Image (cartoon, rainbow, N blue to C red; front, top):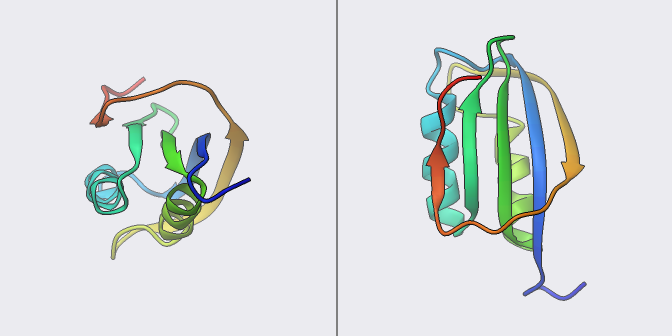
Length: 95
């Protein structure tokens, strides 16, 4: 895989990740790393995201997601391959 290869990953992040600015953190990080996709809260208390971009950018975003914003406590991130193409990074409604 070359550095310019686009990859897409689906994440489900658990822990103390709602009510701490996690979605805003993800949007800001995606903008900084030129990653597209989306993020949303889930009714079960987790945060779900799809990340698309270069392998380096997506992996860097996953590493940042492991820590989250200042008041978050991430206990687990489930990561799976995904498909899709996105023009920007969106915050979607809670499901």
